[in-house]
Length: 395
Image (cartoon, rainbow, N blue to C red; front, side):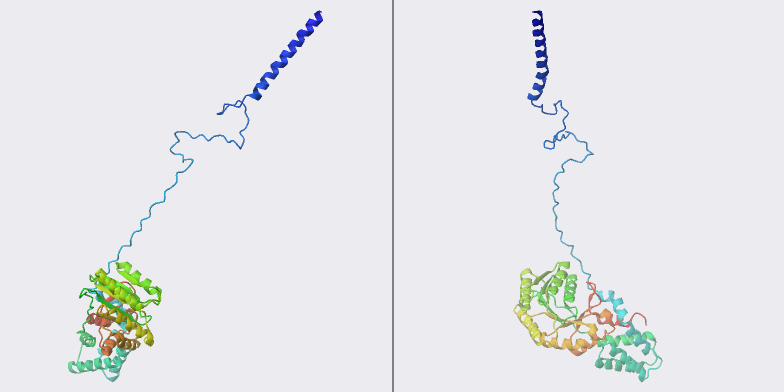
């Protein structure tokens, strides 16, 4: 009986111990894990549930933010280019005299060297003639100048170099016909702007010179509008528009290959509507032997004149072409009644005598001369200043 009681007690103790070991394990398996990092396990977080990123409320000022704020694009304000202010034309040829003198100095030195000899024989006079002819003065003009100089030498006898220089300067200036009217008619009248038609052959620098003429007028206080009637070359219209943008002048242009006369007509109309002083019309460079092109140039002039007469027709001649320029000029005068000549590239040639030849042959005044590639290297032609540069400063 005692054995039975002892066995029961031992069985109860074993059962109670087994239950005590199993309950905690069951509790751990049934209880859900605590949120917010309160779990007592040391299990590594899985990649599917990354730990939350803790951002401190007050970050150190020296640390960059974890997420940068989007940067707003700055507002770009397109600034208009500052307009250029052309140099005043008064005295411009005198300021550019050194450039002209550099290219013409050989002519001046040669003439003075011969004329200052104690005795001038026939060979000496032939040297003088050759120098003038090689400078493109022309045969007829040269004969007149030399004859007048010979008469002076015969009458005056002994001479100093200074006296010879003064005599030569007087004869050359006289040959340039200083009494010719060289003013540009650029003043508006009858309720419309003055109209200047710019013509010339290919390669004479016509479009560039047209832009420079615009600067000359603006420097003298005129308002200018360009008409890009050279529709055969898109580059010509672009080039002229660039010249206009520099000084604040509007450019009227048409489609490439369009009717030049139509563009010229529209340019003058625009000038009338906006109260412009002067309209400059750049035409296509034309070879004088192309009859159809020359006829078209005549058409441009006729269409423009529906608004009123053309005030100036300026022929652009390249001084380096010499006597060939005279034939070009002659053909143009037959088509459009040229009123003035602009000689370009005089700084790049020793043939400045072409000025004399053009005026003597055509009876048309040289009104402007180009003496360089700079935007303001175009000057009103002044005969006395030109001769001074031609002969140089030394007597």
